Length: 615
Image (cartoon, rainbow, N blue to C red):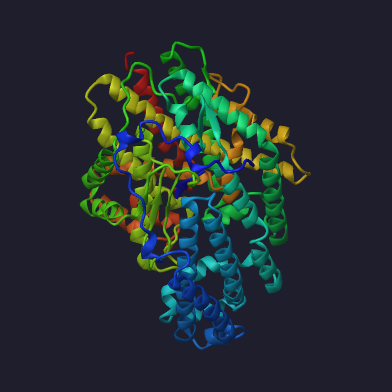
């Protein structure tokens, strides 16, 4: 779903912030037009919908509270309209919250936007409190009664959603406790998330006299000049270290918050709540983690040893891990070229997929420039089925930015295709949420690779793809291992900043291997990873998706007849089917312990190809 990333220093003024180097070379970068959601923060439409949401949620609860068993016994024709009404309210609430979130992400340091976001979140949390009781009461209806009602329209259409709701039943608490958890999320987890976002967005890094925000500074780690990469890494480390106390407090607080919720709900393992949300079994995730960690020597250790050799060194400093290869020309890629590259790759797979992706460009659904205060990283926000997705990027013209564009547009296409399932069943479990995004990257990579004019350029692109795959698979599983250690040890008391740094270094050393020198400063680099804060244990979904797509792409490369139609059916299903049912038509089974080796062997094969190249 996304790659967005976020102590405390006062926000620098816009005039004090340097723009990305060579920004003029990129052409005119698009900014999104959010008016399709609402005309503006203070518009009458926003005020009217907020008031309507509050009134209609209250009315819905008053009419249906305590009556769901009665409605279910009357059949699907009686309960179905209540679910339809609930879905319409979810769409309304989602539209409002999506708009507030997108406006806020455009400049998280703007106090006006921050207040609008905070106020909207508070009002919608209060309004949705009345809706929360609906699913809780639905789970108290006798299974046999509900199963009988599901045989009749319009309730039968919602069978997949109701099945998902019922999976939560063993972990459901008494209504008043659930209401308390829900309401306190604004002043609890939500507030700490917002603190993280705003403080990270306000950080400024002094790189050779330039005051840069996070994204341009991270971009310096891909500069051709090794001294620039070193200075950027030192700037990052210095600022992270200066704000370590705040990041440590946020991490400890949120880990404890999660432990309390897990304990009350009865989750046995620190990641079980995420597995439940992802609709994936713990043994399947454990098998993925075991397969990847066992493959560290064959993948990351092997590749970084090869890369160090290319640089004429025994080992690379950590700031050189993603450095461009030596003696290979590098240029900034203009936005129009990036657009055409991705659309051509999509069109080569399916003209229909390219047509959907083109709408993002033609209808101003993308926000691409780097701006002070803008949320770092990239994401595709699905908003709600009654609207359309929006993509945020921080485009700086590097080949990885083109791959990020392909990735986020993959999400966008997926979200557009899944939208007809409605607000309750369009969302895709994280186990499949990265499928279209990673597949889109692979299509774009293959298109670029086929067009490379020489061996040196081909090697550089292939190496960049291997590095992306290592970042997606090896690095994300190392992130997952770090989170497991943090949340497990937090149960015994608060973790000091030093302890968090030590845990980080232990998993990084294991995953990256001896050919990467993790020197002083790198121990603080856990601080800016947003998934640890916003979505605990989300990160394994990237590795899940990459390995899954490698297997899917292998089926596609075999010219399997009907693949495109089955692929579109997978994306169009949204959340209506479990991942196992969606993979079955391709002959794939993620429950098979050998499944993960298929995806990992593709990465291993690319590394072997690089080893066979001269230079």
